Amino acid sequence: MKAKITITPKKAVVDPQGKTVQRALEQMGYQGIGAVHVGKYLEIELTGDRAAAGSQLNDACLKILSNPVIEDFHVEIVD
Image: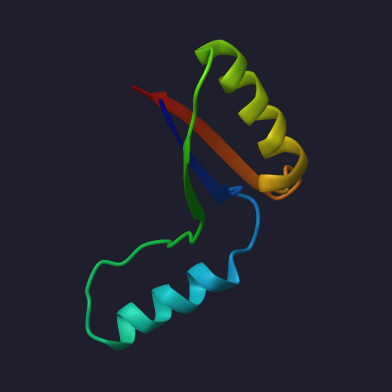
């Protein structure tokens, strides 16, 4: 199994990296650029029970992989 974890800033949080990318794209002439949010993407190889792995990864995201005060995360486990 493989877990795909996406971590993004919460909508209410100012994202300085996203703003920088947005301005750079606009300065390069790209049109219609809205809000840009820069996040993190992780892929983790897993063995064992799917439900237990999902529970452990949610716990890991809350404790170490993300900052739950300013970031949201989504865990997807695929075969």
